[in-house]
Length: 157
Image 1: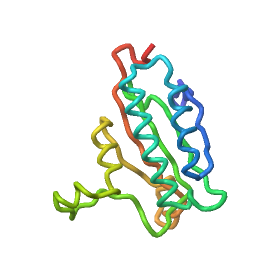
Image 2: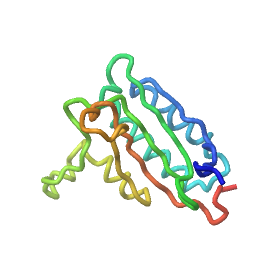
Image 3: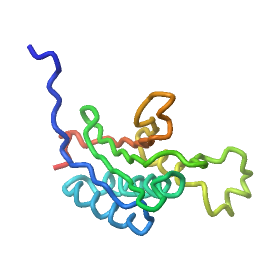
Image 4: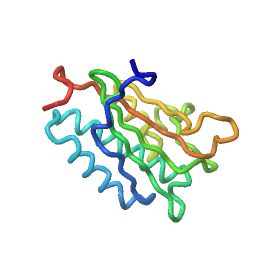
């Protein structure tokens, strides 16, 4: 019996993109290619979420600085669940959040602040965690993830 349990290798390789909004189209295209054969509604939900999360990483973290990067990972986190994760290059002074103090009229005219609401609506679950969960490493990066249910056969094919 092995000391370390067997873990299946990742099905998809992680992809690294320059931290520039001009590359979000490539993030979307690569994700569509990686999910070829999966149901269209799953693919579109994952693509929209990846685009929003990557854009937030560029806007709100050091990923948007010169030479910044965004990493996209995709894997089956548990049976029947596809997990998308976007990892940034570390904290800056701002962070994305869902505005809590808007009036209904302000929501109607707001040009920003809806992206995470969209992620929450499209994903089965979502959240974030620090890349290194130690207090003195808090600026090293954050992974924002979203999960999507897989079809019954588990692989979409």
